[in-house]
Image 1 (cartoon, rainbow, N blue to C red):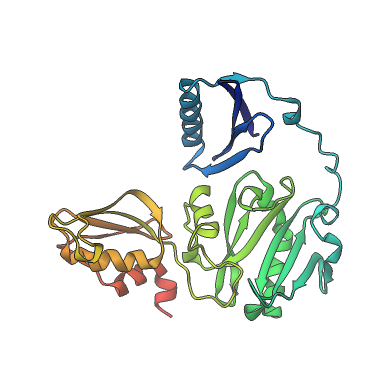
Image 2 (cartoon, rainbow, N blue to C red):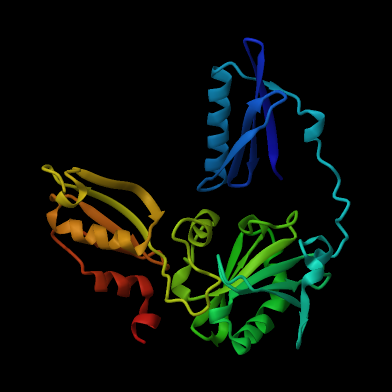
Length: 328
């Protein structure tokens, strides 16, 4: 359960307010002056212990700056959920615009004919048995295949509850491939941008190589919501494999491709686009001895690259895609 703490500081007659909320691995902060608009920011940390340390550090910083903890105001009191027993489609925005999907009880769809912006897409809602919770499935029209979607719905509908068992996500193998996909990613409300008070998760098909077997919630969020994230709504996409990089590249007289910069470093594994793999492999032959690039794939196997043991981009791609795709 999320916990929020409130702080105030009297700054020459101006009351400054700051609050911080710890919600699992996420930290939300808000700040402003009494009577004025509040600003805010959010951060996703590596795990719950890291999030707690981050909150503790931020609170200590504010206390050193003169803020004191105060009781929450009346506007912060939690209101009871008066819609706890209401069907999801009665709560969801434009829920009355959805139409039943033939042959799939408990599944409804709405078509958005947006020629500009994201383009036309199908917005499915896969309801649980009590219709109080469900999963969002969005499929862009160019890759929308009715037979594939139907097979996918057959698999997902009996398993809606996986998204609400308390875990952030489940990577589940399909009994048989559906088009190019061999797994399904079930995401809980914490990985769903608009989740209607924890009632809506999301689901989509993936290739095995696109989500790590041991991925934490932080890594999954980065893969599906961050910059250069997986185009999960595009079903005719090329493979989008896991690419986690850690590196320490150094050149005493500077890398020419980097404007003379002498080092490039990432101390822990982070999610990166393929372009960074290309760049690092291109810089490696110029790097000093002791430089290293580590590439981690979806199995959490690591490919080590050094100036003495260089690798090609083709080798990196085969490592990232795995045997199932490189053999095809």
